[in-house]
Image 1 (cartoon, rainbow, N blue to C red):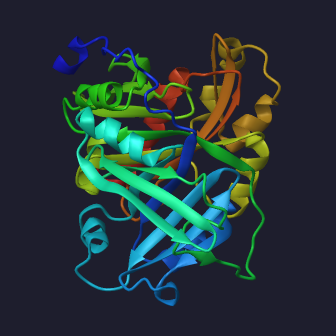
Image 2 (cartoon, rainbow, N blue to C red):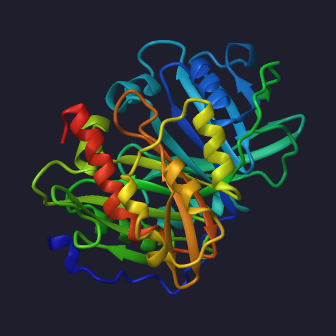
Length: 376
């Protein structure tokens, strides 16, 4: 429990030295990018945007870019053996490798973060084609995950230089996903505060909220979490670490199967969670389910809401309220072969929190899935 002794993180006075406009893209390394692209189109309603591979001069990898709202995913697979991508897949399985952040000056972002202690990943690099130029730079964060800084103010192309438009005839409809709300990282024992300091001191983030094992626990498992956010609040990174419990927690299970720290889940926002979840369920996306008893006292807990309680219960959507309003959220089961990465669908109606009132019900649902897998 030593990690809980550090209550506050000193944030540099110059908190917005790294202005970030938003999430530019997430790159997932996957075993079969073509099939993964079909899955994200079919199940999640992502739209085809761009492609890079042998036809575009790439000899070692193939990538498909999908978009929905402001969310862009790159799905990348190796084309030959012995690549960094292949080694990443061997260790971690399918998962998030790159969290790319949209900035106005990728060189400045790199220089400032490295000066403050970041481990360099990519020095500022300019790529160009007939549509203009893009500057990218990058640093390492927890595990093998990296942040790329993407400067695209002088680029008018479809996505990035080196990619061409991808225009297949197969185009299932979108399901209403709008933007990345937050990204959750799982780190090892007693590492949470190390990465809280990293985001505070290296990237100028501030701590929004902290949860300890009294907030996030069940009869069997526990974890601790702190939420870091950049200056304008567009980037939010909750960071989880395990806590002592009677059985193996979801974070421990993740660390075992992922082979170390990494992105646990991607939270994506919608303006109509009922319609979005209906569409996802109809396409085969499976969600964690909470017992019907969760809804018996929900009205008393959260007060008056716009949605019909019967609809929320039927779909398994959770509700929580804070001082600013309320939110609705639901979590998929892991979407990869290993029990690692999953998605959260969230609709905020004023609330700025992360569903603390749902933690117990959610983690008990996760434990039921762990028990089925024999990993609890």
